[in-house]
Amino acid sequence: MKIRALGAALFATALLMAGPAAAQAPATPAPNPLDVIPDAMPFNTPYGAPISLQKAEAALAAAQAEATKRGWPMNMAVVDSGGNLVTFKHMDGAQLASISISEHKARTAVKFRRPTKAFENAVQSGVIYVMTLDDVIASRGGIPLVEDGKIIGAIGCSGGTGSQDEVIAMAGAATINK
Image (cartoon, rainbow, N blue to C red; front, side, top):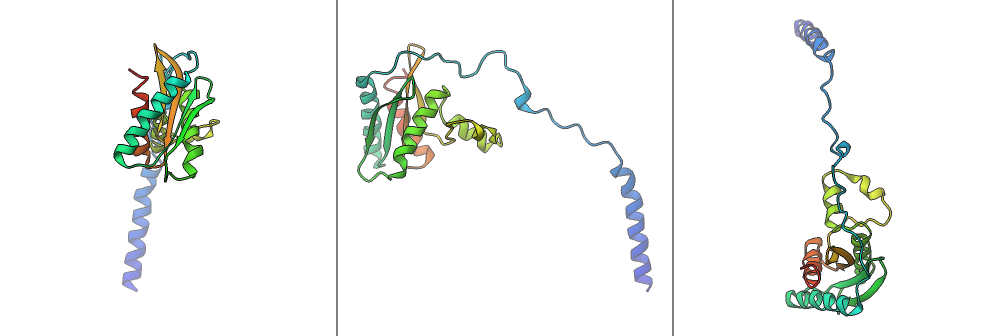
């Protein structure tokens, strides 16, 4: 009986002590980084004339050479500055699901004028509103193709992990992005 009385007294004391602490004003929340207004428009590279078939094929040849060297079967797509498919390669053994994914990565990169890794980073850091934007794919492997300071297209690669896809896309993009 004494133990119950002692327990009740300790509980009542704890409640009395917690009361003033609970009544304190809540801490001021940290400012939302999305509320920061940048001085310059991010990802504002202008669009240029559509990539030529010759340049698109050169980008895919470089990407395919890198994928072959590493033994990674990939799907690779190049779109023009309007997001239209210019050329595509499906390597033997590349997974079928990655056909449309490679095209989607290229279209996302050109439409939003940024690598698709930017969306992956946003989602991983908790900025998931980007998933509400039309035609976003938040997986690396889509890279804009920039010539003379203008976006002429984009390359998208899929078939491996995101980091593998990005390595292959960057190898193809290096033929244009100098």
